Structures are given as structure tokens and as C-alpha cells.
Amino acid sequence: MSTNLFACFLLEMTTPNKTPPGADPKQLERTGTVREIGSQAVWSLSSCKPGFGVDQLRDDNLETYWQSDGSQPHLVNIQFRRKTTVKTLCIYADYKSDESYTPSKISVRVGNNFHNLQEIRQLELVEPSGWIHVPLTDPHKKPIRTFMIQIAVLANHQNGRDTHMRQIKVYTPVEESSIGKFPRCTTIDFMMYRSIR
Image (tube, rainbow, N blue to C red; front, side, top):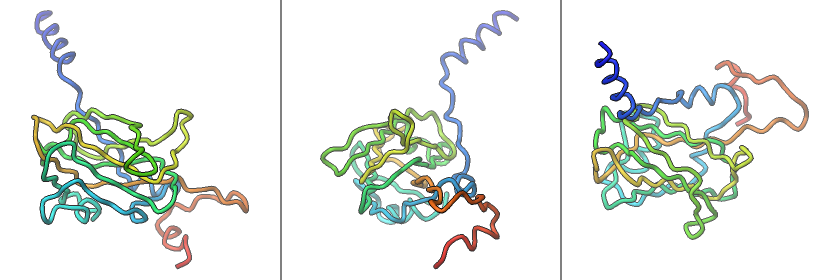
């Protein structure tokens, strides 16, 4: 019995834990503390197979995906027209569906343009299946302000060449009202009428 217990302990120590999925980003939006700003950016990719590009990466459908078509690193570039406060990046990956196309090592870089990007996060993913939340904060835990975000896929599971990413969301914090503090309206009925169109 003790030999089996020791073998199980060794197996646990040598087998990397799977990357746990994060909450659905829609839940973050419903809290009223963040808002998705990906539509305000210009998106570009280092490469893609025809029919598997930016449109599929941003279509809110977890069944579609971006598929790269070239050598690594595979890049997703997100450029804003003005310096923008960004709090969280959410990436959806699914190892069960994508296997060797699933990213295993990702670098997140920020800067003013392609020439001064600096890495602020590097993630090691182990068979991810769900949303991966990447906080984009400075050393003081405040959201960063940037013109550009670049996501670089440095490696895939099983040494795969091309990559799949199913969705990417970019979130900014919602500013408090300067008039005064109002209670957050989080029900669907209130959210339908929260802005003037």
C-alpha cells in the first residue's frame, strides 16, 4: 500500500497541472466593473489560413478559430488609435479540440508601436480548456496604458507548428462617475438602457 501511495505522489509531482479555466468574460462584463474594447482596436495577424483569421477570432463563437500559417512565433497585434487603459486580456483555448495546435507558451507585450514592445507577461499553458485571464497591470497593480498589445505564441503542445486561438477579449476598467457614486446596475433590464445611442 505504501509503495502505491509513493508512486501516486511521484506521479503528481512529475505531471504538470492542467491550466485551470477562468470565468466566462461575460460574467466580468455583467459586474459593471469592466467593458470589452476590442472593437475599438485594429487587429492584425502574422499569418492565417484563408477563412481562419481575425473575423473568426472576434466573432463570439467558441467553435471558430484563428489558424496561423507560417513559422513561429505566431503574432496577434492589437493597436488602439489612442493610448488606452487595459486591465485584462482573455484568451480562449481548447486542448481537447485543437491538440497540437493549442498554444503552450505565450508572451504578452505592450508598447507604443512595433519598435518598442516590451514583454509584461509570459504564460506556460498545460492543456488549457477554457478562458485564460491575463491581468495587464504595472508593478503597482494598476491597469496599464498602451497603444498596442501583441500576443506571441512561442510554442504549441506536442511541438505543433501552427496554432489555434478561438477567441480573444480585451477589457478596460469602467470609470467611476465624476458626479457622484451611483449604484451599479447589473441586471439585464438595467443594462439594456445604460447608455444613450
